[in-house]
Image (tube, rainbow, N blue to C red):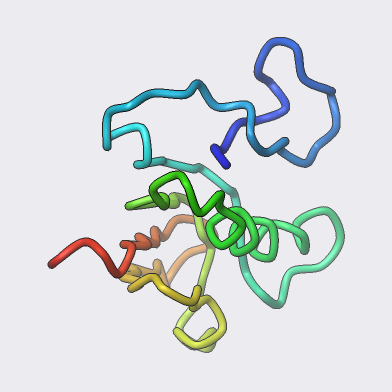
Length: 118
């Protein structure tokens, strides 16, 4: 499925993004996404606790007839060094992260599908 936000025309106004509303393209670049998430910490509570599980499920729940998402870049992860790589791992993807340890906010995370040779 593609990623889309609830701010897209024709979708609900809920805080959680909807899945599967992204335009269908035949280009492999249609499987590269950028997401500004404002915290995906596994330790998050309240309104942000659903974000990491939603991202994991969205990447793994793909139609076998379609190519997988090749890359997902996430900004504003708010991850800190006490959150291990294992806590943000997604099966079938390599992850690369750059945390911002000295301040609140910031940080980025990149997931690359195992079919992409790095």
